[in-house]
Amino acid sequence: MSTSPSAPNYARLRHFLAEFSRLVEHFHQEKPLLEKGHRLLSELVRHDDWLPEVAAIPHPQHYQQHLLYADPQGRFSVVSFVWGPGQQTPIHNHGVWGLIGMLRGSERSQFYARVNGKWVPEGEAVTLRPGDIETVSPGAQDVHQVSNAFDDRVSVSIHVYGANIGAVQRRVYTTDGDEKPFISGYSGAFLPNIWDLSKERAV
Image (cartoon, rainbow, N blue to C red; front, side, top):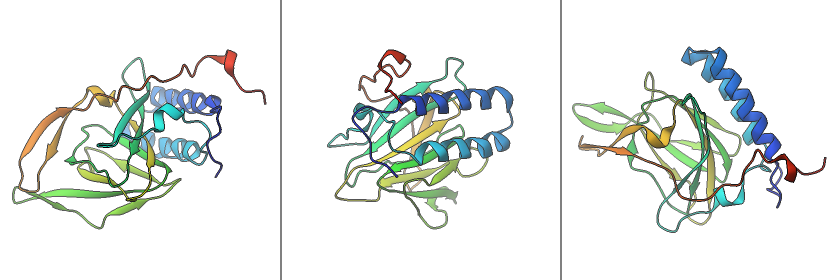
């Protein structure tokens, strides 16, 4: 796996977005869409030469969620999650399907299930490493807690969701069963125009 150069290879990201746009255009059932989307995201995160630097800067107190692309028809969105050392999410749901691809570092995902009104861990926690893909879906496993697997370094993962995830009303949970609605929005970093071909690297 290569390290990220000073001039990101936006052509790789544009190719992924074009292919995923074709995917959601032709596949409306979740299972085949996720199977094919898994392969597309796996190919994208196999390379670490395309993510804008501004979309990989951590915050000292909490994780960052940078919008990389929102489909104009609201069919999917792509975000980078940037984890500072030791940072984690609360237990939460998504409400839409999602694909999570590990790009740098490592993160740990623990799914939860409701038992007698409380949220308890479901199965063993999964550790994602660069190139690994995880799936979430309201029809299967959708409630989890995610954390940076490292206490001394930054981790970055790429998430693809079946909606503009920053505008979706979701829920956070406590293990006692309490819940609270939230809309995540996005972190405020200014992303470069990945569609500006005038700055494309020579091949």
